[in-house]
Amino acid sequence: MKLKTNQSEFRKFYMGDRIFTVCCNVILFLVLLVTLYPIIFIISASFSGVQAVTQGRVWLLPVDFSLEGYKAVFRSQEIPQGFINSVYVTCLGTTVNVVLTLMLAYPLSRKDLYGRNVVTALIAFTMLFSGGMIPSFLLVRNLGLYNTFWAVIIPGAVSVYNAIIARTFFQTNIPPDLLEAAVLDGCSDFRFLAKVVLPLSAPIIAVLVMFYAVGHWNNYFSAMIYLKDPAKKTFQVVLRDILIMNRDVELNNMIRDVNILFRQQGLVMLLKYSLIVIGSAPMMLLYPFIQKHFIKGIMVGSIKG
Image (cartoon, rainbow, N blue to C red; front, side, top):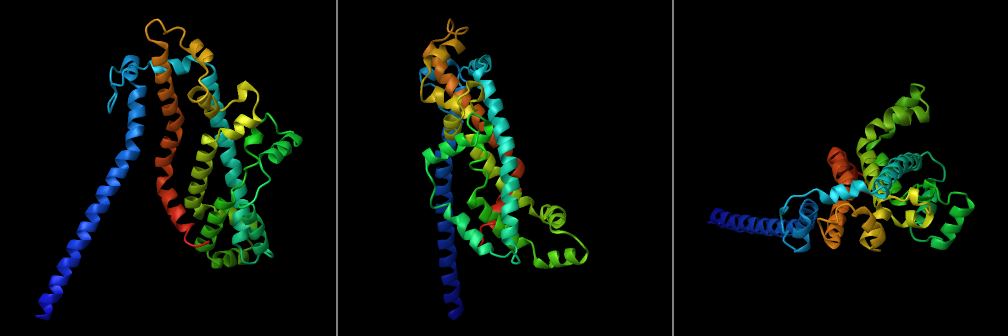
């Protein structure tokens, strides 16, 4: 009798667990659809014809397949130049960010560093308080960085949040025994960092690369403030000008050769969708290559702070 009761309770628990799992999967699937549909719509619209986009006939798949939006993008001189500038800033800025973050995080993970708790408290203080936009602008200008790409790289060279994650990773995954063995073999601290720590830190490096690269690629505010030369505009600033400020004069110049066939407003909409796809593509292409290390690094690095 007791065995039958236990089996009955187990069946109820098993059914309840399956119902809960099914409900969670249904909710997550709906969330996936809500998140994924705008991306699919933008991609489909960018490959559709001007009339189909203007008339709202694009729902899921491209209608009247066309590459006019992408052709208009590459006819412009400002958009390709902005794309090149963004790639340059992203690559250079990410390299500087990762190097400086590792140089800060690794010493703070060492228990033999005198005053490391004080240093950690000081850098954590910057997460709560900052000087503000005007003091930052004056500082950048007085340092001679204004209207240079360094103005969008140096002020945010180290993220305290990323440094704490990296420090936690080092504390969790680099045992002190490795350092003791390396010291006995005559290994210096810099050599130990280069030959032992960094090869074992691929997951956290992937996390830092992804975080910093996405931040630089999507950043437009700093570039809009500090870069006044039109030749130095990043892709996000150009995209912002087109999507928000509606620079009709420049758009007319871009579509002058094709406005005989298509109405101006329809091509402007098509151009917007094409620019969004081009602006999102680099990060989407980067993520699959570092996904494995990224997931492992972000989970391990955030276990404890």
